[in-house]
Amino acid sequence: MLLHKVPNPIAMTNTTVIFKNVPLDMTSVDVKRLFETVTLELVETPVCISPKIFEVVVKSQTDADRVIEAFKTRTLNNEPIIMKIKPPTLVKGRMPSQGSGGGGGGGQL
Image (tube, rainbow, N blue to C red; front, side, top):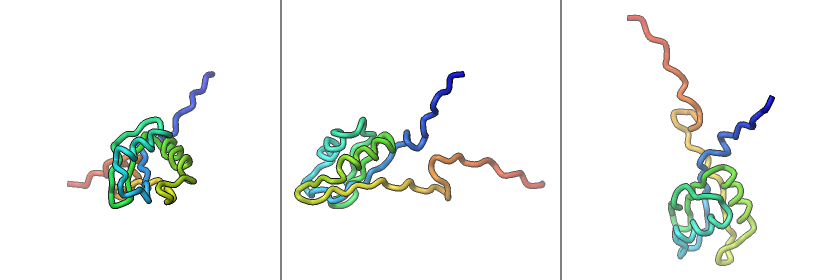
């Protein structure tokens, strides 16, 4: 019998990396180029959410981990690079990857 390894759905889900301590003169294009040096593929253009902080959505948890590991000891303009994975947003008390449950039972008429 041939067994196939089922990919981990969490590892294959788009993952947002929070990139802090970004130099003020660094653009979205610069951030994208920086991430592309270690990640396989960017899903979305980096978004500046406040001065010195970008959100970058990468293709998978694996890519996010790869980026964080690659830059954890580096600096930009003599400032440490700070990166972390943004926790998924809860929707109606459920994780985004969970199913919707099912319908409730019908009431009596």
